[in-house]
Structure formats: structure tokens, C-alpha cells
Length: 429
Ligand SMILES: [Zn+2]
Image 1 (tube, rainbow, N blue to C red):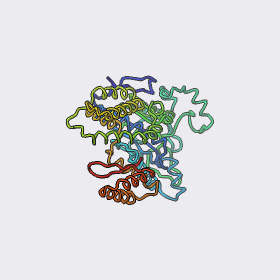
Image 2: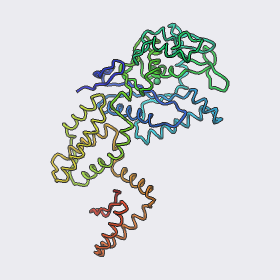
Image 3: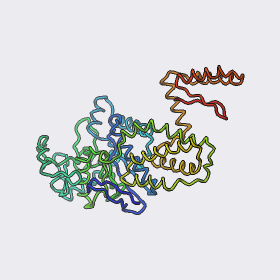
């Protein structure tokens, strides 16, 4: 049962064969740190997090690099608007990004390189392109010569002639072809700049990914990913730069979220409700007294799960499988048919772990859910505890009517009281 990946470059689902057996080298274009992240970022981040997790789950050693673009017109404009420095802006949004990533439950990549600390590598790469007559300089700017690279357009399946026709609107008279793009930009007053063979300046956007991916992953590497919106021109330009400089393919498999069946945005919304159901089932099993020691995950369930995920990381179908299993586990628990539940519960937990779900454990999840609910309702936890203490006392005095009255009063507010062997607990409905 081998992993298949939809490769944008070939337009086909292909068997995944890593360049080095047992290892995966993957680069994903990160964010430009000039503003808060939005749902589009979350979608791409969740998609590639799932891919990263599943590759690791499948036993691969994964080297995952995701960059931060920390030099860019938008950053410079923001710094000028706020009378601040670019470093202040980028540091602030990198910190914010890390907090967002944590709240989304993302795994940290192996490396998160920043463009501004790779200026030497960027300059070296541009020099290589000059040596190969793929770059030319004009007034301290350096441009990539698109017509010099015959494979241009192969990822996005665009023809050079069509692109040239479309690009004429914003033609820079100095460029040899309207498709040529900046590798290095001479510095203007008030902009961050670095010394270079072409005078003081800063890198263009596309070149950083080529420089950092080859530094950390070599060339070619296995998987290059990013949002679908980056396919053209960014990824096309990365290919032109990297393949032009080294004469080797940049990456074997190109993955674009949006083309994938994974829909991070929809997934993150609907998962919120589903989490509760799964956590409840796991807790139910924990409280059922079923012996879970030394159990092996149910093989047939695991095999169905891997079959779905091996099909281009088909997360929606893998999730459907998980929720079907939750439903049938609940039916078995209702009927007190405990045979096989331990194995199936282990499979459920393993599947969730592979997707990065339910990593909190039921206790932490429910206490967070309670805290959020109390905040929304404007209740203090002490009020609930106090009502439960009064009810406990009523029960001790065998005043069942009063105990029931308090229980119903809480229920009307959405609080479910449960009497267990360990005492009275409560949860939100
Ligand atoms: Zn990139």
C-alpha cells in the first residue's frame, strides 16, 4: 500500500518514491511577516501540517523547512507608516505567527529560516545565474532573463507567448522581456539594504526560497509545497532560478493546497464540534473499566485509515472513517459488548494522533471547553461548585426532591450533573 501524491508538475497522481529511502525533504513557502495571519494561511498551514504528520507517522524521517519572508515592500511600507523599523515589524509578526501556529496545534517545522539572514547565499545564487547568462544588471538592479530558461511555465502550464502578452500592461521599459523578474533591487532611501557586487540593495521575493531550499535540503529535494496562489509566478520563478543555476530539477513532487482534497478551512470549522464527540467516546471507554493494557490497535481499521491517507492524504475520507468508528464504538458501549473495544479504541487514538487531533487528552479538553462556556454565559465556576455542594448535602440528608430540583435548575442552564463513584462531576451540554 504505497503513498500516492497528486503532483502538480505532472498533473497526475504518482507513487511517492523518496530520493533517499526512509527520508523526506520538504519545503513549503511560508508567510510574509507584515500583518496578522488569516484563514487562507491557516488552511495552507493545516494542510501541510497533516502531510508532515502523516509522513512521520508512516515512518519517514522528515526534514521540513518553512521560511519567513522578512524583507519585502509591504514590510517596508508598514515600517514607514508606523515610524518603526522593519526588524520591529517582522519580529512582532513572527511572534504572533508562532502563537497562532500553537493555537492551531501545528507541529514546528525542522527549520524556519528567514530571508534576511541568508543574504550571502542569495548573492552567491544570483552570481551563479549571471555566470550562466540567466541574469543581467541594470542600474544596480539584477533581473532574471525568462526567455533564457526554456522550461518556464511548465508548472502552471502557461505558454511564454501568452504570458508576455498579458504582462505588457505593467512593462518596465528597462527589462529585456516583460516576464523578467527582479533578483536584486537597488536600495532607495529609507529601505533596508545590504552590500552586494551590484551595489547596496535587497533581494527580490522569489530568490530567497531558491537560496534557502538548496542550502537546507539540497537539490533536487522531494516535496515542494505552498498555496495554489503561489504557483504562478512565485513557484514558476523558483524553478527558473534553481534549475537555471544548478542544471538540476528543484523538487520531485509539487503540492498545492486548494488542488488537494484537503480543505483546511472547512475542516477546522467542523472539527470543533466533532472533537467533543470523540473525546466523550474516549472518556467513556476510560470509565467503562475495559482493560486497555497491552492492546494492539485494530489492524483492519488501521489499514483502512492508511488506505485513505495514502491516497493523496485524503483527510476528509480518513475523518469520515474516524467518525463512523466513534459511532459504532458508542453502539457497542451502549450494548455493553466489550469484545474488541480495547483494540478499536487504540486504533481510534492512533488515527487521531496521526492527524494531530485530540492531543490534549480528554481532561484538558473538557476543562478548556468548560472555561470557555462559563466565560460566554457569564458564570463563575464557584457558583456551579456551590450549587453542587448544596445538592450533595441534600443527597446526604436523603432530600431527593431538593437534590433533583438543583439538578434540574442546573440542567436548565445547560449544566449536566453526573453522580459517579468518585463524587459529583459536571459538564456542559
Ligand atoms: Zn517560495
